[in-house]
Length: 305
Image 1 (cartoon, rainbow, N blue to C red):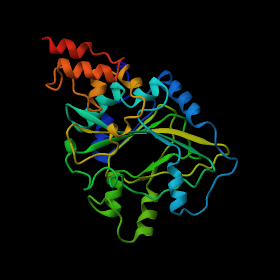
Image 2 (cartoon, helix red, strand yellow):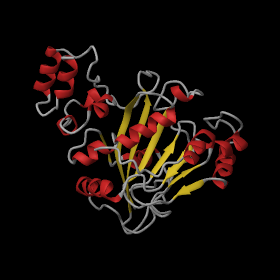
Image 3 (cartoon, rainbow, N blue to C red):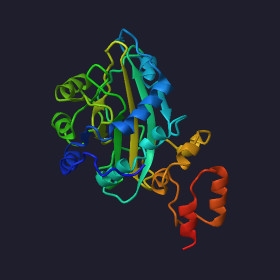
Image 4 (cartoon, rainbow, N blue to C red):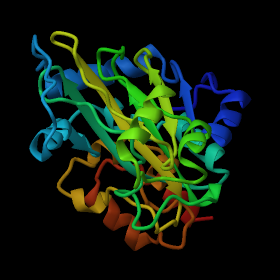
């Protein structure tokens, strides 16, 4: 999977990122890049949408059901699904937004939502408590970039992502507020008044920071569904940030990734680049025993220089 050099990302998007903490890039992935991923979602999750939506009040159990149809990299089938979160253009964008030379993929999961499965409405919140034990950094290079990829077309009645720009949230809550601790209902209502709903076609990309207030919305279209992926990158070596520990899924089919990914893509998962001091004849041969279809040639060539 090579860079296409045609992604609709502009300098205006970069300015929005620094100012608002959110970017929406429609059709970041073209149709041919998304269609096979969509088909794999159908195989994995099927059509579970009901004719009636669920608007019952949320409790702990019902909130937990919002995350019922989620899977974590590596995925059970589909090379394209396994590699889309490691797409060269996505890696390049993460480096540009964080202004760093090397990034690490620390979150990648699929997420399917279906009308009637539960009430998917959420309160406005910032995604940092399950990414770090501290708070979002104020320094760009020590921050993260979160990507929400629409795998299906998403409209207002299909669980569209809703967000408040950093600048609008500051007007309501004050500077650098990432948790609402006072006047909760009133503040939620104020954030809702200036919120933006992202209706966009499959292949579109929503980029947001850990300090951006956002929420999920309910699916109300009869037999509706929303397919999406959540992908997060950080500066390589930043131990303050984490989500998935890839090594904990050693039982997963990593062969799909090792036999198809480039050294750059594997490096985003923590595999050292060719030429790194980790590599020796021993470590290369043992890695080949573990992943027989891994292309070791770049690593062997670097060793022989």
